[in-house]
Image 1: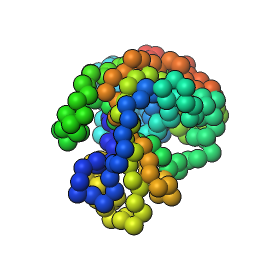
Image 2: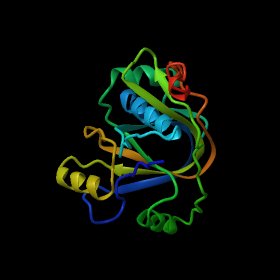
Image 3: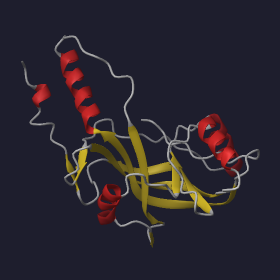
Image 4: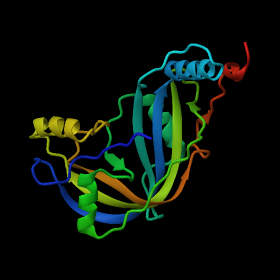
Amino acid sequence: MKKVIFLCLFIGVSFFAYSQDTVYVQGYYIQRFLKNEILFKLKNEALRNRGKSYTKMIDYTQQLFFFPLKINAKISLWEREAIGNFLLSNQNYQHVEVFDFPPFDEYLKSYFDTTGIPIQKVEFPSQCNYYVNGNDSIYLYKIYYIEGNALRVEVENDYLYPREIFETKIKWNFRVQINRSIPSFYAYLFYKCDAIKCDIPPEGFSEWKTEDNKFSKPD
């Protein structure tokens, strides 16, 4: 499971965190893949399982999204039924939230040490189906519904220092695009998850059938 790494919170960059809260978050973590790359992957896995020659793909095109539904079970942010249509109509979505899950890197573990908040191990399900979004024939999705405790950190979004943003994006492997027009954004740092489920997608998504399981059939 690849992680989404939030922006650096330490002194030394020109945008910085300036408030934080512990919150209970219910939301969706969504991974979007190109369908043709997943088909390539499944075909080669089938060839490998049959002892035949196959081509190993090094990496896959992937986009990551996080949609918090509710904070502290009472403050609503996103509606489940709006997520599918939103992704269809906003191919280049600029995020207003970033997020991360344990195990954290050393710099983030050190940050948590200053808060006194204990971090619990977070495990994602290993076997999850791909989903399709409506009639979209280009993308496939892995979808995780998450409930848990997070440290929510407000981070200043200083448009006067675009170079620092670029340098931090590289340094911290920051892989989602932040909306630059907002004065600040939120980093949700999950330190305890009560539920991570991959079988309750938002409305508009349906389980992808791999063309009648053609890759599992013998030649």
